[in-house]
Amino acid sequence: MFGDGAARQGALHEAFNMAMTWKLPVLYICENNKYAMGTAVTRTSNVVDMVKLGLSYDMPSEQVDGMSVEAVHEAFLRAAKHIRAGHGPYYLEIQTYRYRGHSVSDPAKYRSKEELDEYKEQDPVFVTQNKIISENIASQEEIDAIIAKIDAEVDEAMEFAEQSPYPLGSELYDDNYVQQDYPYITD
Image (tube, rainbow, N blue to C red; front, side):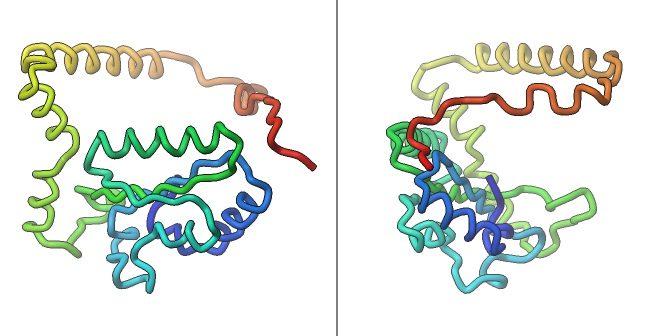
C-alpha cells in the first residue's frame, strides 16, 4: 500500500515488473488522495490516472471509487480471487480524499474550503451509516451502541498499552513473518 506520491518512485516499477515476471501473490494498493504530500497530482505527474501504472506491466488493474464502501469491497474480492488462484499480482488505485494535511505541520492551504466541503459530503463513513439507517439494517440507536462499544474497546486497548512494560529488545523480530508454502512460486 502506497500513496499517489510514492507511485512515481522507481522502486515501485521494479517491484511491478518483478511481481509480474514471477507471478507473485501481491495486492498493490495505491491510495490516491489527489495530493502527494502537499502538491496536487496534476502538478507532479504526467500520468494522473495511477491505474495506468499497473496496466503498463500487463498487471490486472482497477481504478476504484474509494468513497464507496461497496465498490472497495467488490474490488478487493476480485483481486483476492485472482491472487488466490495463483495468477499473480493485482493492482488497485483507490481514489479517495484526505480531509486534513499530510502531517501535523501541514495546514493544507493548497486546496479550497469548497473542495474540502464537497468531499466531506461524500465521506464513506457517513454515507454508509445513512444507508444502513435508510435501508432499516440498523437504527441510529443501534449504531450509537456499536460506536460506544468500539470507543470502550479502544480505550481499554490504549490503557493496556500504556500500562504494559516495554518489550525486550530480544523480541524485536518475534511474530513478524510466518513461514508459508506458496505452491505457485517456483524457481
